[in-house]
Image 1 (tube, rainbow, N blue to C red):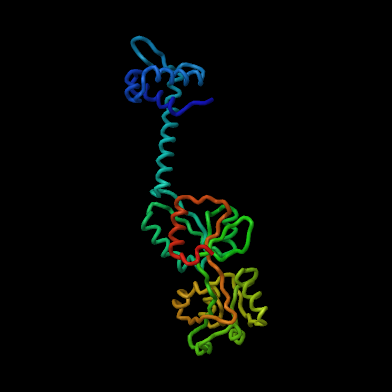
Image 2 (cartoon, one colour):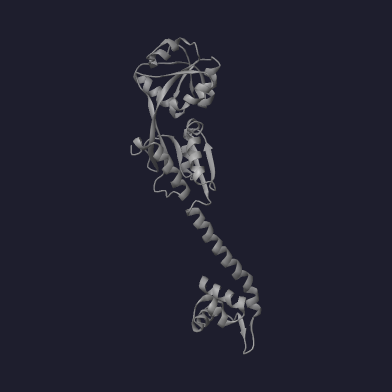
Length: 300
């Protein structure tokens, strides 16, 4: 059954003014065109909607039954168009993405402020989950994109670099490392070390890179979250090496940090999305803010 919106609007116009002639003026069409429209509608549904006479125009019982349905259909269609327009103009909508905690708790808030100031009607949901979970959320279609470390080559994911983050040494104040100007990874092996548990991608990266240099750390504590490792350092349980994204948290906890050399270990941070994914207008607008903030490595 193929009923058009034009036919339904014509039916509603006639019921509103109770006259074919006045409905023609309301719809800006000729009376023959209106008559053909209603005739086609009635032929499609299988019966008359109007009882016509020389003196009056009234709805048939079937017409009365169809009237609230027709009103609802037109209202739903019009509302859908308004919502769609508002989504494209960012007057409404949702932004749903994942971000690893080290980014979500440091650099992300400034980006959210910039986006929210321009588009305050957009509702934002940030899933601050570990890097591995962020990737899986993208794969499962639970979020449009994730901001995390480079997940490596993949057949189903795209990765666009925002910036490169280097590892830094983190230790309490008055620690012996404080006197070392040029801290190397080998220097860390002399002290109790705190790191993430396997199979964390950060842990695997450190293990693989340092093993090639014959550097072996004295690991005494392991955690699942970098924030926990930082708290352990703050409580003098050992030292650690973490992404430089955590500089803000280290300073807040009155901890010291230094760049690490020989070897320099770093990871690219960027936008992870599914291949061939078409972003919503809200997501595209937010990503443009991110890409504008980090233009120097955007194309890597």
